Length: 266
Image 1 (tube, rainbow, N blue to C red):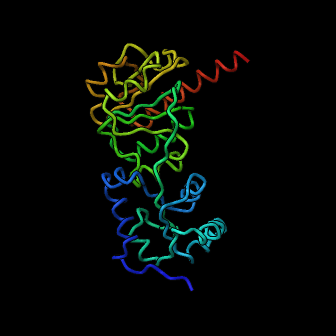
Image 2 (image 1 turned 90 degrees about the vertical axis):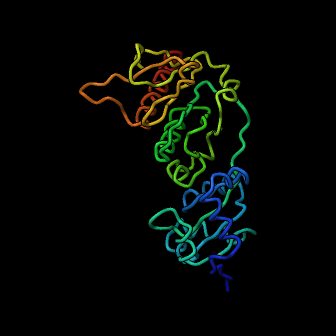
Image 3 (image 1 turned 30 degrees about the horizontal axis):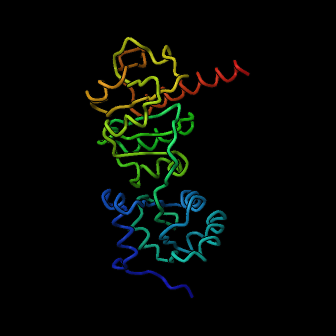
């Protein structure tokens, strides 16, 4: 017989709830929450969770869930719970029966040749999408300036679909702290509505920082003092693109140019 956590007053449940709700708690603990079969599976490939709650019957209802159930039942920090407890913690409409607390990854510092910088991007869905596009386009590091949505929040983590375990991310930065991380990059381009330089005219094969700004106000004045600008020319009367779309366009243009260089050299 498996002992179940059945009370919302349980200290494990309270701890999970604090990490789900509080950016301050996530960063002071250096831990964040992942939910669902796929994300918890990714997390287990990275590190052992410091806490894991699961609903046995929900996991056993799918083949992939059963495989994960077989894997976690022997973990010392894994505890069975009820559907009601998990639903009270879940950030999704249909919980998959598993939620876990994992440490924030610590990546070795590197001089990436393509860096994505987020300057006040506040929508969690946009941040998660940009992280996924960054990984797909070959970005080596993501830097988030203060004012950007917490990259470790449940909505960003869910939208990122496991990218947090593979892509070096540094958040909560001021420009003074970010500058040493990008000093090796020969150019920094901030995406703006109007610029004399179109994105496909810029040479993005060099060590480059691409900067995406706030959804409503764009990049900050401070950022403009540290970066050149480029724009995405558009037909019709549309003034601007969604931040995640614009960032993805720039990232994949950089990827296209870099693939061409490799092909030409080969």
